[in-house]
Length: 422
Image (cartoon, rainbow, N blue to C red):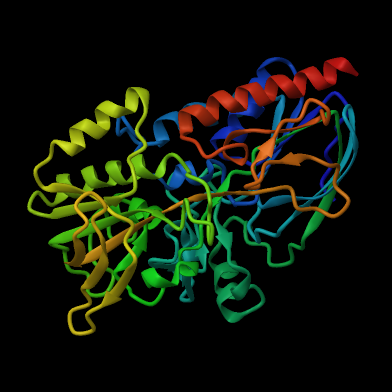
């Protein structure tokens, strides 16, 4: 059992992405004790997997590093990785929460020397890169991981490979006897900032994701473009590792579709525009086609859209692609659809296709949890008649990083008000 002393004056933040980190820091810097729990073995959420933010196209580690420093310097914040909420009961001002922690098999003595990884021969799919490459089964989640600590995959614990890691560690950091543990919290308010998951593109069977290697998703493209990604920042076809001569971006892949996600996630257009700049910087001769229903680039982001639109190597085609098939001989992809502006039928050949999939919120799905309100699409709505548990960030609405930060600040304020009322 972890020794975590909390009171009804404390706030629980669920989710250690940008929204959760922001909510935790804002509440702590206002003088409140905060416990933050994160399911992954590191903080930062999906922001850590981005190559660049739009529209400035700067790396996400800039903002994360500042926040991690604030967390290290603030004793009011305690965080737990590989941790999930197992149960919630109670009411505003008086919640009892149980948290379960998965074993990391590496303790706080880890110095990140990497000797365990050197000794380990077993490999697993790399979750940080969406399975596009392999890593050792003893690994650091990514090079900027916070906390900076290795982890052993459960598949090697108790095996010869696990013993090799144990023997290689000079600091006694490998602990194969770690078990799942639980601890209890008493808190006055909860900020649910559990983030989102990409829509499962395999469900869109007419696009062939999972069947055709050269059909990837937008989150996979983000990792491919990153220097610490599976291809070292090179845009390559997964099937043969060749540089594509033309790439299609398909917007609303499964979104605005009653059979999949009936809503618009808002940021997918801008993500594809951003990724278009990645390709154009690395491959000036590559042709790009963006197939769209309509482009969502509002307010200050319209200039970014106009800039990409002016590129003569980028074509915008108003169309909802109906089907993708593969040329088995070349691995190229054949797109079929209709240009809704001209009425002409589309039959085009591309080396690679990127699907802009939507955002699915991580809801509270616990037995006997207090009631919270969701909209028709599953996004959290902060109902004044159900105070005490507040959504923040992408669990409330599909949005970008900057807006998530603003929303998380509002969530922290609501949590503080819940405690003040009691």
